[in-house]
Length: 316
Image (spheres, rainbow, N blue to C red):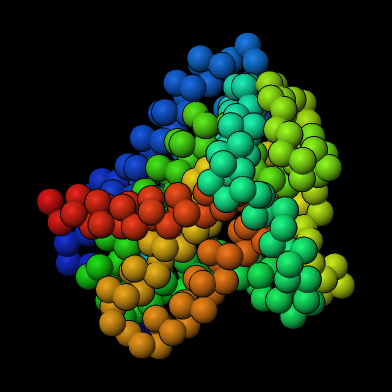
C-alpha cells in the first residue's frame, strides 16, 4: 500500500461514529452510572470526570479530522486514538472497584482447592533460571505490541476487515473492563504481599475487606532482577499497574483474540510471529505473580468465546 492510497479520499466515508467508538461510548456511560452509585466512596471523582472529558474531546476531534479528509490514514488515526486510551481506562477500573469489598481470598482458596497449592507462588521457585525469567517478562510486555502488529497487518493487507478487527479487539477490552469494575480481585502480586507469603504457603487466605481502598503496594516480580526485559516489565508496572483486573486475565484473553485473528488471516508470517509470544503470555501471567492460574485459564476460555461471539455480531 503506497502513501497515495493512504491519503486518497474514500468514496463512501462513514458519517457517524465507528462501531469501536460506539462500544467505547457505551463503556463511558456504564462507568458514569457506576461512579454515580459509588460517588461517596470514590477517592478523586473530579479527576475521573476530567479524564472522561478529555476522552470525549479527543474522540470528537478525530471524528472532525476524518470528516475533513476521509481517507485510510485518518481512519487509522481514529482507531489508534481509541487504542491509546485503553492504557488510561485500565487503571481507571481500580478507582471504582477499590470501593467494593475485595474478593481475593475466595479466588486464592479456589486455586488451592483445584491445584492443592498456589501455582503463582511456586512457579518461579521451580523454574528459577535467568533465561526463563527473561522469556516470561518478554512475553508479558509484548501485550500491546502484538495488538499493534495485528492492527497494522489488517490495515495494510486486509483493509476490508480492518474495522472488524478494531471492533473485536476494543470490544474485548471493554468487556473485560466491565468485569474488572464489578469484580474486585487484585491478583497474587497485591494479595500475597498484603497477607504475607508465609500465610499463603500455609493455605491461610484472610478476607481483606476494603484494604485496597487505601493500599496499592505490590510484590516485586520474581526472576532475574538484572535482566533487560525484567526492567522493562518493572517500568510498565510502575507506570500503570494497579490492584485490579485479576480475573479473568485480560492479557491471556486479549492475546487469545489476537492469536485467533492471526489464524484467520492464514498468514504463516503473522501466525508464527505471534505464536511464541502468545504461548509465553499464557505462562508469564502466573510466573510474574500477576494472576492466579484460574485467571489465565478463564482468560483462555473467555478470549475464545469473545472472538467467536464478536465475529458473529459483526457479520450481522
